[in-house]
Length: 278
Image 1 (tube, rainbow, N blue to C red):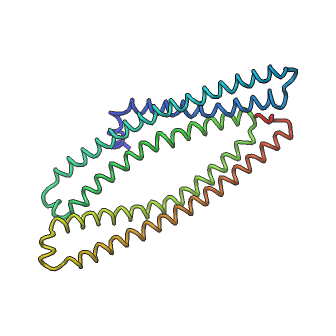
Image 2: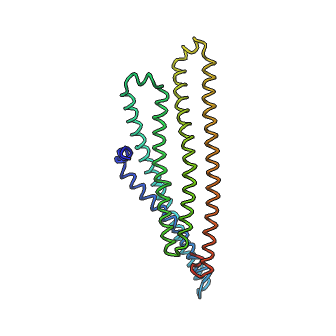
Image 3: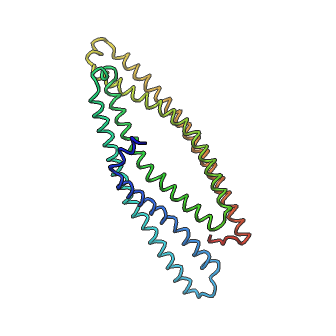
């Protein structure tokens, strides 16, 4: 974590600004259902003694507010994505430059023992992964935490019975995702190793193409590269199978969770604890 923080510190204000924009966009996006619920309760189900004109004006007013609130998250999200991408690009560029500098400082023996193409592949992979980490942290993880926090707060203010369903769903879904994700990560590490190895082999073969041709090793080299490509293909297909399994199980669990929440909400409506709009 100290190493990551060393690279994050120069971009800390960009990251804080991006996180603030992400939180605002997420919260504003969650206000729209509240407006819809108010319209259902006060204008559709229980209009009271309002005339038709008053009902239309009231609904149009709330719909106008909903449109305005729907535009604000889009504006905040646009700025947030730009700032997050800027911070991620600077973060990745700094890591790549430091990695390149450290590579050039290595002894000549280190270069002889390691293929140049493999070294370049590792540097590019680290840069890409760190940029994806930054974008995912701001755009997905932080926004999800803000959304879950708002959802729990709203549930507590309405009825505590919704909390156990969310907690059980999160624990089961998180455990399932973590278990399968570890297997996917293991396969991905194997793919990265084989890909780096193939990059090194191809670079060395092309750099020494005269020697390869003079010794009549063209076809053996082709066979060796085909075998390496086949190993990567098999690992990729293994990862696809695991990802599809994870997606299926996640979709099933989310469907069960949604139906459970729907049942509890209906039960609370039948008991007059919640309104239909709530």
